[in-house]
Image (tube, rainbow, N blue to C red):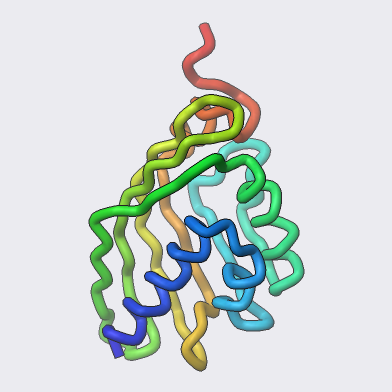
Length: 139
């Protein structure tokens, strides 16, 4: 199953690079859940359902001028429907800033789609890029 999980994560990242909101949304189950345990202020800690995922992802995609993802590693877990994906992103934003972060996703898959994604990232990088309020670089 880990090859299928890797292919799903690769398709997800490719959709982000192409800014294809329909593909990003479709890679999740109808009742998909996104969780962000380290969500900074102004960033939702949880998003539930495909339509909510669309509403969440659209402005993010609009804020990106270009993006690429590197060093993807997908590791299977003991539960066959789960995997951990690690990668780093290099993103240029329309506001002129860069948003370069490292990610760790714990993903539960269902029927070839991402069902429950718990995404870990550095929230200070999001703030520094101006994607949410509270720039940690401001003095």
